[in-house]
Image 1 (cartoon, rainbow, N blue to C red):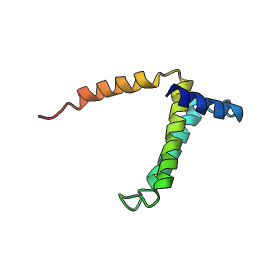
Image 2 (image 1 turned 30 degrees about the vertical axis):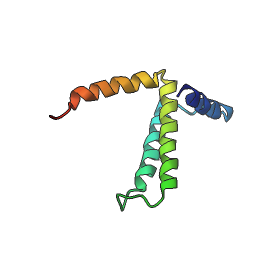
Image 3 (image 1 turned 120 degrees about the vertical axis):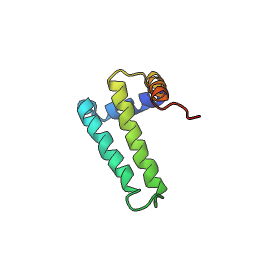
Length: 94
């Protein structure tokens, strides 16, 4: 994961985009890309274009990883903490 984040940040910085990638703009971009992902399922539960689904999902993930990096979050730690919290909130049913 660390190598992928470094690749994303390097790509961004090589293009001079880091000054525009504020937490606010990255959060907005995540929502915009998520809406584009959702558009693939607007009229059907089955997407017509899996390539587009893959590309839009990648965009959501790229912006999310960049935001986490910029805020100094450890991705693995963040996900582990959330899974633990969700396990308490949504316990296994017997």
